Figure (spheres, rainbow, N blue to C red):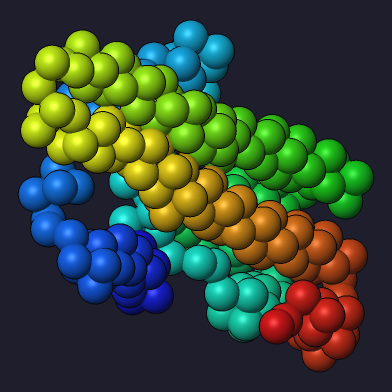
Length: 246
């Protein structure tokens, strides 16, 4: 995750705990293990029930990707395409074979291999479009896992609050404990709403933003490879693809 994302997480905690402190509250008032158990485990259980296992584990895989992934750079992609175009015009398409094996991105490597193998423009487009669309759909399903958790978490928070109220009202014979018990009960609601709006829904939208940026980059690569296959020059390629640049 980049610095802006980390800043957002820190700011979320500052807003929550800082606002509580300004209202005269204490940190201990927001720490309640039973409430956290109900909200977190309940949301995970609901999502696990509704989600196929492949989509669920891909969502977990995305958590690591958010920490490590870098957004693809279309400017750098266009520079690479221009280089490949010059190599292809100088050494022929076979000159791209060594460059294909150097690519870490499997999508780009597949496209270059198809180009080196002499596949038609239509075949390159068909193969790359299928790979691009299917990967996008799989990753969007992973993003919807976090969106679903963001929908369940506030409801589980209400359930936790109701359970806490039931427990608090069971001690009506001890009025001095009633106020503290009711206050503790509503901590579950805070957990549910905060977890949904400060973490789960933002994570889902961040994943979608990365998917959209990657889709744009892969579309640039696909169109560029087809222009190379069509024998276009590097200046012509840059002119045709400059619309992809931010």
